[in-house]
Amino acid sequence: MAKHFLLLNLIVVSFCCAVLAFESSPMQDFCVADPASTVKVNGLACKDPKSVISEDFFFSGLHLAGNTSNTFGSKVTRVNATQIPGLNTLGISLARVDYAPWGVNPPHTHPRATEIFTVLEGSLQVGFVTSNPENRLITKVLKKGDVFVFPIGLVHYQRNVGYGNAVAVAALSSQNPGIISIANAVFGSEPAIATDILVKAFQVDETVVAQIQSKF
Ligand SMILES: *[C@@H]1O[C@H](CO)[C@@H](O)[C@H](O)[C@H]1NC(C)=O
Ligand SMILES: *[C@@H]1O[C@H](CO)[C@@H](O)[C@H](O)[C@H]1NC(C)=O
Image (cartoon, rainbow, N blue to C red; front, side, top):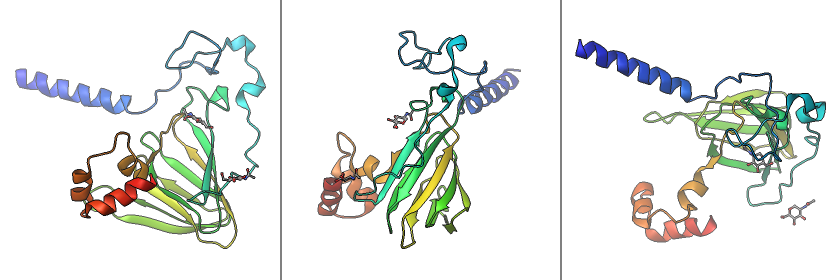
């Protein structure tokens, strides 16, 4: 009897956690974020539905290229509930990514979102790596009009392999997908991860760790 009870408990607990791991469906048509309100629910308050207007669901500017003059040669322009208050609670967001020739969007993960990625211009080599122990690299060269998926949580990247600029649009299955850039997280944390840990983890000597840390 007690054993059955325990099993039932386990099933209930794992079911509820699996459900909680994803954004819940909204329980109203929309909750247009009202940054001016002092009453917050999950960080943002809803505007009075009667005062909601079409502009709350609108953003203009994704035709503008991001500035790729940086070490990576890429720039992500995000469109989320900050730009479109009407996106609040709806579990989706968008980004434009620009790449200079040979620019890279370095390896990163989105802890809360799957990404579906469409190339609008140019040619990009993309890839993601599966979990341990296989760590298989799934990679492909994409051209204009091609669509690729980066499953939730997996480390992925893109590189411009064309001679001109490249542009892509990424749709993400979360209002707040989160971004963990691998190099920043491991070598640029504040405070830093202890050097001896990084020495063992990456099987390199201290000077190499210090050199990488200095860049982030
Ligand atoms: C792009 O960014 C670089 C480096 O921050 C800056 O020098 C340059 O003025 C920017 N270009 C434009 C068009 O904003
Ligand atoms: C929305 O995008 C802006 C940049 O445009 C960023 O500062 C902000 O953190 C983003 N919000 C979320 C919830 O991702």
